[in-house]
Length: 134
Image (cartoon, rainbow, N blue to C red; front, side, top):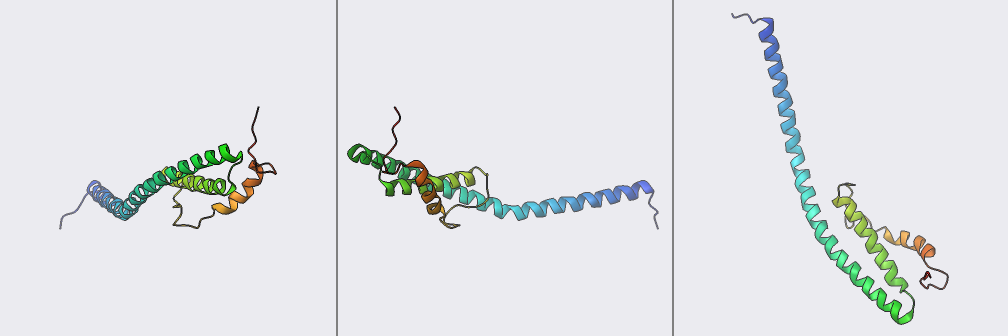
């Protein structure tokens, strides 16, 4: 039987501790891989959806200018719709920039209509016309 010195015993213990730590790190990396690939997939998906939504937003802005030029007032329905699209884009940008892990619509409810009603009162005068500064 071979007797080990204290130094050899300590080295063996350190080696086993390092091996256990490496195994834990490897297990953690394996566990995170699906999350990372999922995040990459959703980031690409939402980047594309955001790009398309930005075009819709811009198109509605141009139509709104047409209403303003012709009638002198903004269209309330288009204004509400564009505000909801803007809030959706805001949520999407927060997700894409890693500010939050909560995925935007369609992975959660469309809550933007309630906020639109509250803000309408603050932005329009009683007649619904745009306020022009001199």
